[in-house]
Image (tube, rainbow, N blue to C red; front, side, top):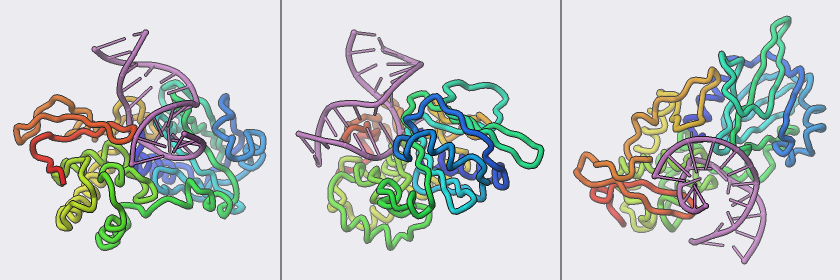
Length: 275
DNA sequence: AGTTCCCTGAGG
DNA sequence: CCTCAGGGAACT
C-alpha cells in the first residue's frame, strides 16, 4: 500500500493520539516481523513499559520514539496498517500493542494481509544505523529543487526506476511516480540524462504537488490501506493514470502500461514524451 | 540492471 | 487454473 502520503497520514494520526501513552503488552502471531530485531521475546522485553514520546515518518517508515532512547521502526510494506480501537475488526490482525495512559486503556492493532511488514526495535542509534534506514535518500517534501536537480543529474537510467529508488528519494512509490510523470508529461521509460532540465524541474514540482494533494485527501486506498480509525483515503478516486489502463486521457490518448523492473508503470501513450 | 522471493487474496 | 497487487531485500 503505503507510500509517502499514506505513511504520513498514519504517522500524524499516531502522533496526535499516542504521545504520552505507555506500552503495557505486545502480542503477535507472526514473530517473523521481528527477525531483524533479535526475535519477538527480546522485542517484548524492550518495548513493554516504555512510553511513546514521539512518532515520525522517515521515507515509508514509521518511527516511534520511545522512552530511554529506544525506537520502534515500522515498515508497512504492501498491506500493513495500524488501527487504534477501530469500530469494527477489519481482519488480518497479526500484532497488537496494549497501551495505557493513567487509567485509560487502548489497543493498537497492526493489520497486514500479506505479512510483509517489518519492525525494527533498538536504541535510536542502533536502529538508525541499519542500512534500510541509514541509506534512505532525502524526503521529497523537504529537499529543495536545487538539491533535487543535483541529485538527478548524478543518476542515469529510466526515470521511473530512479523515482522508485529509495536511496534517491525516500517515500515515492508506484502510484505517485506514475502520477507525477503523467503530470510532467514524461514517459516512464525516459532516460534521466536525456530529459531537459526544465522538464526535470517540472517533474519535481508535480511530484511535490501530487504528494501534498494526496496527504490532504488522507492517502490512496486501493484495497487495504486505512487510516488509524479504519477509514480509506480519497486520492485513489482522483488518480489520473495509475490503474487506469485502457481508459482515455484528456488529450485523447489511451492509458497504457509497461513493466519497469518488477513494477507496472501507467502512462498516456500520446501526451507523455519519451526522452 | 534484471529476476526471485517473501505472503495472501482478488479477479479473469 | 493463472496473473496481478501500493514494497524492497537478496540474489544472479
